[in-house]
Image 1 (tube, rainbow, N blue to C red):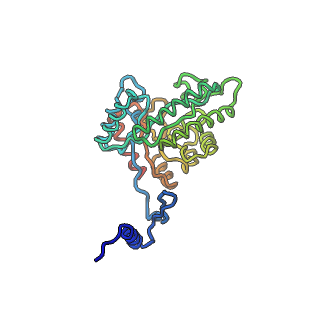
Image 2: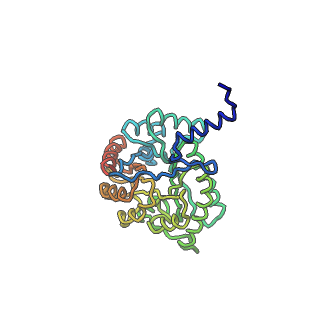
Image 3: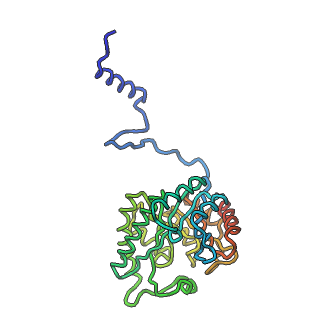
Length: 323
């Protein structure tokens, strides 16, 4: 048999591969990108249970007598049966790369996800330099989340800070007047512009910015949706806090349900730190799942009971409601 030339062999091999694929593969190659041409299968039944996380805030709660480390929160959460951990940025002991990688290692060994980084920043300020400082801080936190392998950052609008301290704001149901000489409508463009400046970093790192109904301009569903709809970016969904709509909470949550990708769920065993809401979690879970919500539900225990006993009771409630 005469030897086969290299060029002939390559051509025959390519033809054989194409024939084996039957030219009917669901994958097509265009402009070096792989795209799926076969649609995903239609849903066949109920959604699987939502994964349940625990916020490190649930252990800490800004209390001097409850200074749990993030590492301890990871271990406790894993031992209690949670699927993930939502890290409160202020609770972290540092930001060095060795520390971040230690947290990732701790989570992996304990078989639990690091699923959210909850940060504090404030874009409601007439001073452009102050807003820029908060933009820089947010971008820095996006990069921290990326280093931790965390896919979403909890974002706030910030607030006017005309009612201080925070305990007084809570006594006032989260209501506060704008700064003298300004109106609520002045604040929205500041927030929208600041978030838009953070979005390129979010997209580059693959980290969503979950805007929360966390007082300020997002205290109501209308304010929250005004910002999210105006920006209209796939990198800015809603992160819904079940305990921060003080008027018509269920109706407000439903207005936000379609744009929600992550939930922080409050419980108040032993009475709330600032207030106690009667949250009907079976109703909330049923409503959110009817809107196709598949994401994480992160517990934020905000009661006065011992977190080591109250948190497992809270997990039981959320497991039942979101399954």
